[in-house]
Image (cartoon, rainbow, N blue to C red; front, side, top):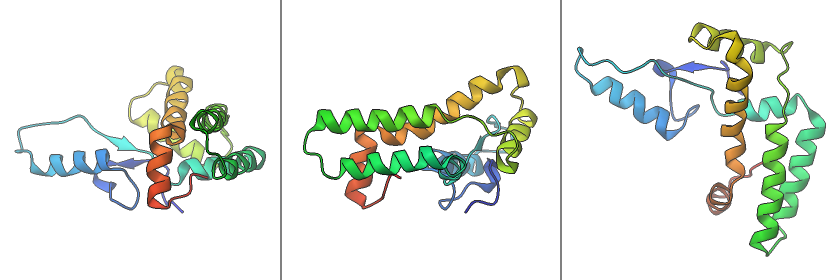
Length: 149
């Protein structure tokens, strides 16, 4: 489980953030003192799964779809099912009463995202989460033995 729903660059690590975030942190440490890069933050691994857990029916449907993919030989059919998974992720509502979701919203506000752009930010977050259901990501995780659901 995650301890913070939003991490700043100093908190990035292989346990909770991806290669791009970790490379940014590495670069930041190597820059001379006079060179500045923009502040950076990320939503750590497991927050998508946590959010899905707030909606058991959606989580169950993704699991069913992922189970189906394992038996399919057709790439076209596999992509249709992956697109259904993406659609479920993109339809996740924001649960403002949840402490982690509220924390994300508060931190993004502190980070400079105005309340008027929150819906667009939430949609962008979900697009990143949905990207794990593209063909390339699916095949890469399958090769590594990682479950998508």
